[in-house]
Amino acid sequence: MGDCADEEVDFDLLDPAIQKIINKAKAVREKAYCPYSKFAVGAALLCDDGAIIDGCNVENVSYGLTICAERSAICKAMSEGQKVFKSIAICAEMKDTFVGPCGACRQVLAEFNVNLDVYLCKPNNEILKTSMAKLLPLSFTPNWVSFSS
Image 1: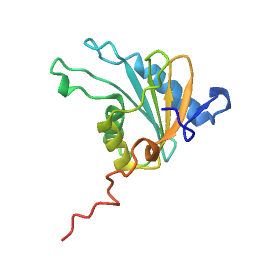
Image 2: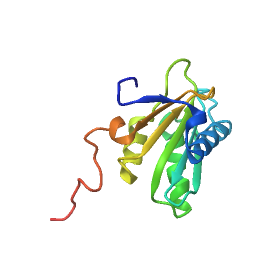
Image 3: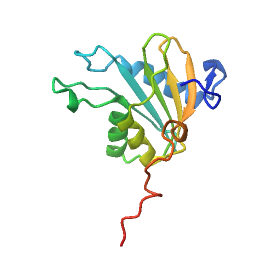
Image 4: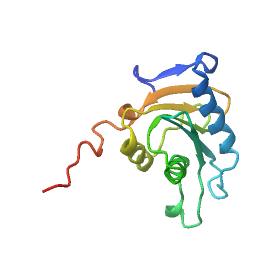
C-alpha cells in the first residue's frame, strides 16, 4: 500500500471522530473469532449521522463461510438502519504491513460509498489513510450499473 496517494497519519492529529473509529476497531478486534488463522481483524464504520458501527471477523471450519470484519460491520449497520458511511477503520496485525480489505470487502464497501475514507491501523497506532476509490479503481458500483432494459 505505499504509493503517493496513501499517507501515514499521526493518530494524535486526527479528527476525534476518526480517533474513535480507530479505537473501536482496535477494541472489537479483541472479540474476533479466529481459531484457525489466529488472524484477528476489527473494523469500525463512521456513519453519516456520527454513529459508529463495529464488526470483527468470524471464522468457520469451512473456510469459505468466514465473515470478514468489514462485512460484519456492514451487516450490523444495515440491521441498525445505517446505510451512509463516511469512513472506516480496519485494525489488523501483520508485522510491518498495513492490512487492507480483501477483494470481497472492497466490493461490498464500494456498494455504499466508493469515496469512503479508509484508515488501515496497526495495534501500535501506526495508521495509513487511503480511500475506497484508491483500493478499488474502476469499481463496479450501483451508479455505474443499470439493470433496466
